[in-house]
Image 1 (cartoon, rainbow, N blue to C red):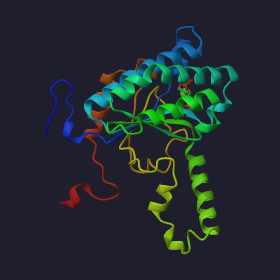
Image 2: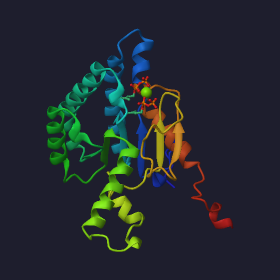
Image 3: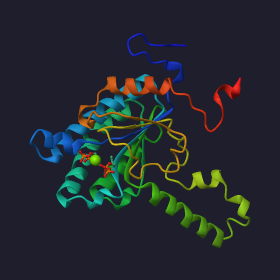
Length: 249
Ligand code: IPE
Ligand code: IPE
Ligand code: MG
């Protein structure tokens, strides 16, 4: 066991995939009497830090929930502001991401975002596609129900085109190959900031056996020490997957 004295983390048993519901940006701004967008801007600084830390300690996959299919309900100014911030983030950070051997990945219908953002994303995906380090997965215009609906429609089309001939061919593997997360292992640990205890349509299929950890800290105030705390708690959980601890022995 390689337990780090300072962080108490066992680096030989890190979660392979951490997924984060970054929440509380708006409240962070409002608490200071500032616009919600100031909170989103501060939240981007946190993403930068957490991505660097995760990559440094050897996390293999990190997913961040950046924009849900329901977030379109927000005032137009906020939605536009979020996309501008995303564009700026990609412009500023892509070199650093690439230099750290991190591979960018997107889940969700990001092609429905403004053209400039789509172009920047495609450029970043292409630029980092051969990197072999951590996978940094951003959920953009992502919804778990949307993802499942899309999969079901694809199965209908495959059946119609005789690509599926027998009902037994529809199995977990086929379903997973038709989700946005194809090739990405299920998250081991879900972190949600700002004290909310719900999934908000995040990774509905993939979180069947994920461990959940929530903190009252708002996303812009989340620091690497909070990430270490989440990992520490995760490492003390007993994952049973419906079975019995240690096979009942
Ligand atoms: C999370 O912060 C970021 C996005 C959903 C884009 P919120 O904007 O949801 O912040 P609160 O929950 O309103 O404080
Ligand atoms: C979830 O946060 C979506 C993202 C973090 C992108 P929300 O703030 O949209 O979720 P609800 O509305 O509180 O459930
Ligand atoms: Mg919120």
